[in-house]
Length: 211
Image (tube, rainbow, N blue to C red; front, top):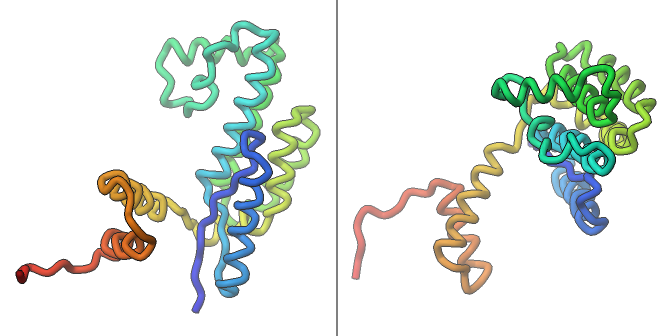
């Protein structure tokens, strides 16, 4: 049986080696237990990692550029969601004469978004050119992101074929976590598994009760 899986990837410096190992083992477990699965790296999580890289550049640069203090969400919001004041501030910070490293990282971030807008037959060529440019950006955080892209090249390109997302899985997980909080935990693993089946499997509940 063939199946498609969307996999979140964690590679930010904010994650320790143990968490990176968990992500690696997760992918390896899929390959071992589901050999026919087609792995797709989830678009949302890939972009989130690049957003983190942009913010990491900002955190370093704000030590010498006070204007960058408290500007985190200017760089993370989509341009169309900025209000007028935010848009004006961002336009000032990204002006060519500012020569901010954060502004350069920001441009690489939005250029990367173009990868997901390409037709499938052009996507790989676009990503190749983006990586070649980004690796010469002199931005260590962006260069590390390029390394992650190259390490999982085929699984990231697969998005253009599968358009898979783990959004449904994350939605189900939020329901499971809410059930855990409501019950203040479960006494044993089997009870927890039963609750997950009831929530995620949408199993029919009995309409009558016996005493």
